[in-house]
Image 1 (cartoon, rainbow, N blue to C red):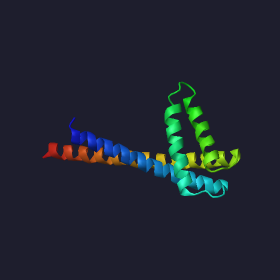
Image 2 (image 1 turned 135 degrees about the vertical axis):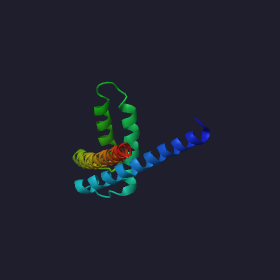
Image 3 (image 1 turned 30 degrees about the vertical axis):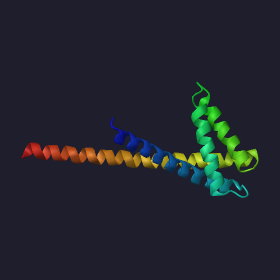
Image 4 (image 1 turned 180 degrees about the vertical axis):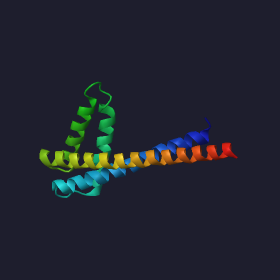
Length: 132
């Protein structure tokens, strides 16, 4: 792999991470607002989302219970970054999690439909080529 290709992949990876961080921060900010957390700003949500992603990446490597540890760590991070109680931290995390699942499902469906339409177009073009 050439240096240019490696740099392009690294740049795309960094761009993907930043976009995912901002999306997670947005949903966490919305969750904090829904939970009624005072002074719930987007900057705090971005910090909590970043720390939650890092903690999740590390803790998810623990066999069998890593996913549970990652969730608990994310809730603890939300509690302390937003300086709120456990109930509001859990509500903020739940709203963020559910919103992320819904958007992820919609994006996955859109991608699947896009791939399906491309496959149909290629099949039609191949059939047309064979008939001519």
